[in-house]
Figure 1 (cartoon, protein in one colour):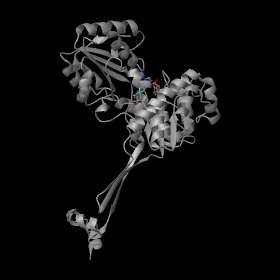
Figure 2 (figure 1 turned 135 degrees about the horizontal axis):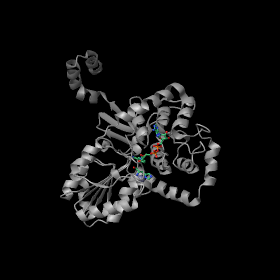
Figure 3 (figure 1 turned 90 degrees about the horizontal axis):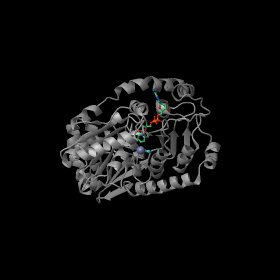
Figure 4 (figure 1 turned 45 degrees about the horizontal axis):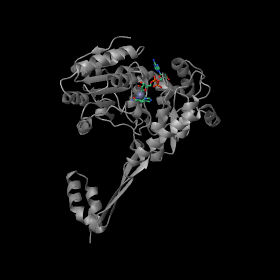
Length: 413
Ligand SMILES: NC(=O)c1ccc[n+]([C@@H]2O[C@H](COP(=O)([O-])OP(=O)(O)OC[C@H]3O[C@@H](n4cnc5c(N)ncnc54)[C@H](O)[C@@H]3O)[C@@H](O)[C@H]2O)c1
Ligand SMILES: N[C@H](CO)Cc1c[nH]c[nH+]1
Ligand SMILES: [Zn+2]
């Protein structure tokens, strides 16, 4: 489908700026239908968009137990390897939960507490994504979220695939619903007879899922827009063209809307990558593979920072010395033995990452996604005295006399 195009760096930024608004309008009626129609709407919309008759909305617990019988030990072992690494990285890098600072007459504190509930979208349209269940379920479990629900599209039987069930179970997810797409996001946001609403919705998905998340985010917080996958690869003449081509194709295979960009200082490499992609990437949307020859690595880094890719690969000499120049990217892969696939599954970092330029303002999913903080203060009379005049002055200036009085009264001898 189409041909790989060699474009100028400027084209990249222009072509990327497509708006999500048209998809928000497409999913609006779906979200409304679920709000009004509840379970019945979920059943109808699943028939319409997934082409299947649902066997249940919430997966019965016996089916989750039985799923282990249907999944090979080798796959369970692979899930466990991924789990260990995700758990280790996310626990170590998590913010300190309790910070209390004693200034003597004033004690101040900041304590992170978990959300009561979270809803995870586990995609499953073209491919299936048990790895995503781990990427969201494990950080939510580490955070201490009590109710962790997941929605995922049903398979052709109208049920959830056994492997997805096992992955959800291993990740600590304790409610699983066989619903996908925008209808799943609406159910998690507003609830239905079978789906209890959640306090935050997280997880990646296609453009419809992402648009629905943005739409409901006026009522329920979301992690970030994490839509069709992207990679931007910066490579010089020392890079292995085959590795570059395979990593680009690895993103394109997620979705016809996925994007892969290669910025290289080598015309030779650009041509090699183009011909390898054409040879190996049959059936993929190669029009979304953009290759540009740049004058320097500096220029490539500048473009990448403007593009804010979901994944950035740095395959050029001295890449490890340039990490501090990356300002906007979801996750960065340094050197030729760091393919995006490592982070997708098992290096331990998270694969739920902002796309479409949202990396400029959002971070990838982490334990903190499921935490909120509460601040504390305990003042003695001396502590209040020390800052009392400042409070009284500012309160009076703001025209809030009771604020001032609440302090004055306490400081009366
Ligand atoms: N950014 C990230 O962190 C990240 C991580 C993993 C995957 N992804 C992305 O997740 C996506 C997975 O997509 P997918 O499609 O395979 O699975 P999905 O589960 O996201 O979407 C499938 C659902 O889309 C709905 N749908 C399909 N066509 C529709 C239409 N015309 N109108 C309304 N709804 C429709 C259906 O209900 C279906 O259940 C890919 O785009 C992939 O790149 C992103
Ligand atoms: N590359 C995807 C994020 O864009 C994550 C993923 C899951 N499975 C395979 N890959
Ligand atoms: Zn991937």
